[in-house]
Length: 213
Image (cartoon, rainbow, N blue to C red; front, side, top):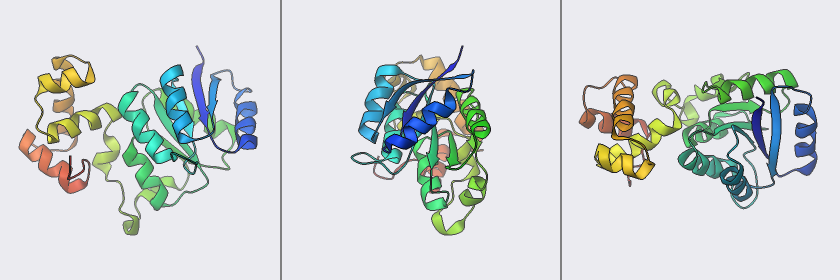
């Protein structure tokens, strides 16, 4: 079955070009388009695509905010950023918002499809030069720990930091308590801490959850 893709890009000619390119791939099917971040959120909720190819600079709601909203509400949908900006000031916020992959515009069809396939399968995909940008000190790099977290783990982590119990988190996310406990265990392992108190301290120190939550 082809990977269902939503294109979020404010320039019509770019959207049309992406649709035409992706039509040449037997593994990808473009199921919808959006011209701004608000539209991307609405279409994502309506279509529930496997992957959203997301521009960052869009009117109304930008790509970072749209990514954050989609990652929180549709953890099964992967966001792949496709932007003209490859610097840490743009890459870092996008990845922190929940994007699973990042490409700089100008990539060929082969790499675009490879990235779509990777993020659809649950992997992270960073295009050429993007990983280097994440390591830039001046922009506040995304830590290795943060990059290892899935969107769902981020949701659980935020609620753990808010002091919610596993039962309360399960009710909010509409999952089982056992699933929440599994995410907690994964978070302890990924962030290399022995207990929940240490988990929250490290999450705050790394900026994985906001201080005012």
